Image 1 (cartoon, one colour):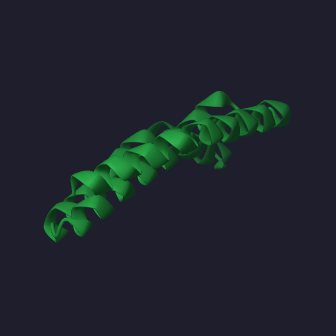
Image 2 (cartoon, rainbow, N blue to C red):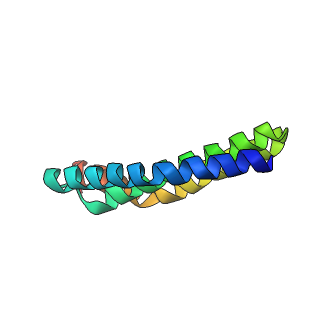
Image 3 (cartoon, rainbow, N blue to C red):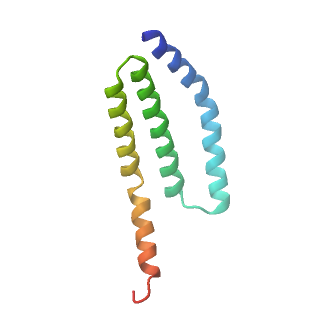
Amino acid sequence: MLFVLFTCSILLYQFAGEMAKLIAAVRKMAAYAGVETLYIETVLKAVGVAFISEFIANIAKDAGQQALAAKMEIAGKIIIMALILPILTILIETVLNMLPGR
Protein backbone atom coordinates (compact mmCIF):
# COMPACT_ATOMS: atom_id res chain seq x y z
CA MET A 1 0.00 0.00 0.00
CA LEU A 2 2.77 2.40 0.91
CA PHE A 3 4.66 1.55 -2.28
CA VAL A 4 1.57 2.26 -4.39
CA LEU A 5 1.04 5.59 -2.65
CA PHE A 6 4.69 6.53 -3.14
CA THR A 7 4.68 5.54 -6.81
CA CYS A 8 1.47 7.45 -7.53
CA SER A 9 2.85 10.51 -5.76
CA ILE A 10 5.99 10.41 -7.89
CA LEU A 11 3.90 10.10 -11.07
CA LEU A 12 1.68 13.01 -10.08
CA TYR A 13 4.74 15.14 -9.32
CA GLN A 14 6.23 14.38 -12.73
CA PHE A 15 3.03 15.30 -14.52
CA ALA A 16 2.57 18.53 -12.54
CA GLY A 17 4.73 20.48 -14.98
CA GLU A 18 2.74 19.23 -17.94
CA MET A 19 -0.50 20.06 -16.18
CA ALA A 20 0.76 23.60 -15.54
CA LYS A 21 1.43 24.01 -19.27
CA LEU A 22 -2.04 22.69 -20.08
CA ILE A 23 -3.69 25.06 -17.62
CA ALA A 24 -1.72 28.01 -19.00
CA ALA A 25 -2.82 27.11 -22.54
CA VAL A 26 -6.48 26.88 -21.50
CA ARG A 27 -6.27 30.26 -19.76
CA LYS A 28 -4.63 31.80 -22.84
CA MET A 29 -7.38 30.44 -25.10
CA ALA A 30 -10.05 31.71 -22.70
CA ALA A 31 -8.48 35.17 -22.65
CA TYR A 32 -8.32 35.15 -26.45
CA ALA A 33 -11.99 34.14 -26.66
CA GLY A 34 -13.03 36.73 -24.06
CA VAL A 35 -14.44 34.21 -21.61
CA GLU A 36 -14.75 35.36 -18.01
CA THR A 37 -12.14 33.91 -15.68
CA LEU A 38 -14.86 32.75 -13.27
CA TYR A 39 -15.93 30.08 -15.73
CA ILE A 40 -12.44 28.87 -16.57
CA GLU A 41 -11.25 28.80 -12.96
CA THR A 42 -14.35 26.91 -11.88
CA VAL A 43 -14.03 24.33 -14.64
CA LEU A 44 -10.33 23.79 -13.88
CA LYS A 45 -11.07 23.38 -10.17
CA ALA A 46 -13.86 20.90 -10.90
CA VAL A 47 -11.59 18.86 -13.17
CA GLY A 48 -8.90 18.88 -10.48
CA VAL A 49 -11.36 17.71 -7.83
CA ALA A 50 -12.59 14.96 -10.16
CA PHE A 51 -9.04 13.71 -10.79
CA ILE A 52 -8.08 13.81 -7.11
CA SER A 53 -11.26 12.13 -5.89
CA GLU A 54 -10.93 9.38 -8.51
CA PHE A 55 -7.26 8.92 -7.58
CA ILE A 56 -8.12 8.56 -3.89
CA ALA A 57 -11.04 6.24 -4.64
CA ASN A 58 -8.80 4.00 -6.76
CA ILE A 59 -6.23 3.81 -3.97
CA ALA A 60 -8.98 2.83 -1.54
CA LYS A 61 -10.26 0.17 -3.95
CA ASP A 62 -6.75 -1.23 -4.35
CA ALA A 63 -6.55 -1.48 -0.57
CA GLY A 64 -9.82 -3.44 -0.51
CA GLN A 65 -11.87 -0.57 0.94
CA GLN A 66 -14.77 -0.40 -1.51
CA ALA A 67 -17.06 1.40 0.94
CA LEU A 68 -14.48 4.12 1.54
CA ALA A 69 -13.92 4.43 -2.21
CA ALA A 70 -17.63 4.97 -2.77
CA LYS A 71 -17.72 7.65 -0.07
CA MET A 72 -14.74 9.43 -1.64
CA GLU A 73 -16.44 9.44 -5.04
CA ILE A 74 -19.60 10.90 -3.50
CA ALA A 75 -17.56 13.53 -1.64
CA GLY A 76 -15.89 14.54 -4.90
CA LYS A 77 -19.25 14.93 -6.60
CA ILE A 78 -20.58 17.07 -3.74
CA ILE A 79 -17.51 19.31 -3.87
CA ILE A 80 -17.91 19.71 -7.63
CA MET A 81 -21.58 20.65 -7.18
CA ALA A 82 -20.57 23.28 -4.62
CA LEU A 83 -17.94 24.63 -7.02
CA ILE A 84 -20.35 25.04 -9.94
CA LEU A 85 -23.03 26.77 -7.85
CA PRO A 86 -21.96 30.31 -8.93
CA ILE A 87 -22.08 29.31 -12.60
CA LEU A 88 -25.47 27.66 -12.10
CA THR A 89 -26.76 30.83 -10.43
CA ILE A 90 -25.57 32.98 -13.35
CA LEU A 91 -27.16 30.56 -15.82
CA ILE A 92 -30.52 30.65 -14.05
CA GLU A 93 -30.43 34.46 -13.86
CA THR A 94 -29.65 34.64 -17.58
CA VAL A 95 -32.55 32.35 -18.46
CA LEU A 96 -34.92 34.30 -16.23
CA ASN A 97 -33.85 37.57 -17.84
CA MET A 98 -34.63 36.15 -21.30
CA LEU A 99 -38.20 35.24 -20.33
CA PRO A 100 -40.86 37.67 -21.55
CA GLY A 101 -42.43 39.89 -18.91
CA ARG A 102 -39.25 40.36 -16.88
